[in-house]
Image (cartoon, rainbow, N blue to C red; front, side, top):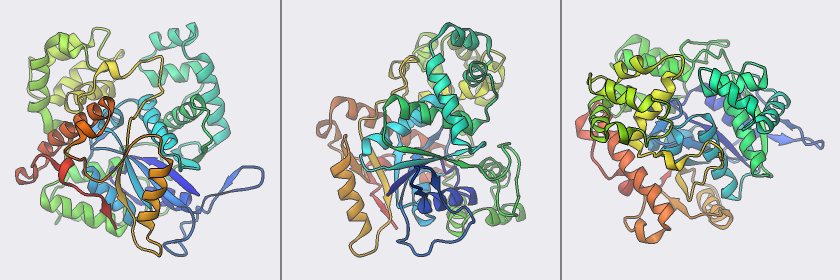
Length: 432
């Protein structure tokens, strides 16, 4: 059985290892209910259990931030820490709000033609509760009550909560969107909710068993202490698999980490000034007077965090501001997204990494299955330089955006010598 796991892996930690282990051991009882071991026991062997397909964000993440580590580094970590293969969610979608991020992830999963089940993290871990919320959302979306909730709420998530009549934590909101996307497609892929380990606060450390910390805690530690000699940084290794920690440490030593969206302050603000107010209005979800406010703030300062702080208020969340600003790096356009149709259309599947070895070779078997099952072209590794003639216009357009998004992403590296362009053309399929 092939089990997909949707995650950003930003960066990979013991919580991710746990969900991969859960997916590897997942099985279904005769009544269709899932069961799996969550006791943290290691795999019986590298070939035991299901094939785990990680569906991972590209170089930009869903809360409106660049990834701490580039997508190839995170993909290599994933296949060395439990995944059998990694496919990317294109940056145009991976940096968007929950409904579009989830829509793209599920679109890729369904189009692959090989996935039997999808596992996603959830604060509740109760699929029945989440399924009921998804059903209510689908029946109420577009109704007058929902429009009123959205008008009165401070954000889309709060509008969803008002419509459902219950509060939802961040990963539960994502879980509901995954379920909505599966229902819209009448997909045969079976959803499974994995209860998150630890607290829901993304800014705090959680250590129920001395080994779990949030990805946000790890990122914050790295941003405060870039020196690998720092005792607090070295303490992170108890929260991460050994390979993941060593990869993070190497990236810091090489200067190939991105601290935050502020690493692109000059680039983003320069592009906003170039676009002008009318150009900003064409960015996703910059309506309602927000384009004017963002443009005005970018004309007053060269600091992105100042722009975000001054534009954030009851009507506009900081995450929404971040996503709009990040859109100038990913070339996202409002025309790609329609609020009344969340059925994202990802026109290709991009395989970043695959675990090799075995007899017959696992990597070849996986590629063969994916090429046979996929409803869209499969790109294994680097984008061919002839992509504009090799693929449809829709596919080529999205690939062109991904190429530029990566060329701009590397400009945020701490080491200027590591910021060479054209990595999308030169980075091969990772095998490990």
